[in-house]
Amino acid sequence: MRMLTRLFQRFLIFCLGAVSVWLIVFVVFDTADHRLPWILAVGLTYGLAAYVILPNVVRMGLKILHRRLIPRYTITGDGLPGDPVNLVLIGTLQQLCDAFATAGWSTADSLGVASSWRMVRAFLLNTPYPTAPFSTLYLFGRKQDIGFQQPIDNSPRKRHHIRFWALSTAHTGDDITAASFWLNTDRPSTDQRVLWVGAGTRDTGLSLTKLTLQVTHATDSDTNVERDHIVTQLKSKRVIGDVVLHQSGSRLQTGKVNHYITDGEIAFASLMNN
Image (cartoon, rainbow, N blue to C red; front, top):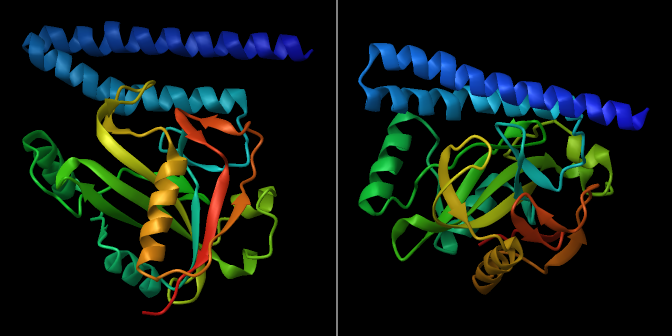
């Protein structure tokens, strides 16, 4: 029975793939090619394929596969594994902002049309944009609450960066290998002392996502090094207390998450008053 279920799932995935190719090539491109110059037809086809058709196809495919894992990683807008969770800081929003400001990091701008255009321009011209926006990742059923970054060589193409999601300290005693910890969707007030669950990675250049071909930053695969870099910087400025490592919970094997290498350990520390 299980084999039949898998075969049926693979057949449905194949059908989704065939339909998406037909839609992109024989509907979108064919229609655009008859009405627009060739170069514009290709650009329009790419935009609709990468940002509309393929993300929805991927999302439908994941629903078919019933991928219900306890995440030790964030989720992209397409429902795919994103950056691994590797740092949790305990304190208020003001303490969090003050800690990263003291360490020389900038708060990321909100993602919007103006900030996205400025980011594209800075990326192409290689001009500084120290508060560049982040793409949206999801954890606890919502996008990141705040993010911080530190440019490398003053370039918008390379940077240390981390996204954070607030989680009530009522979950401090929860087992982080339990689904209840990761699947909690309650958003606490950020003026109180909360858990700031973070996913830190290092951008290294330009890349395309594998399944949807969207333009994005390329990232260093070793997120353990980035976690240690962030912790070292915060400790050197004495804005966090002692660091304790805990193993995250997931049915994935420790090793690779998406294209990342991770030991699955999350660094926990309390933020300190300056």
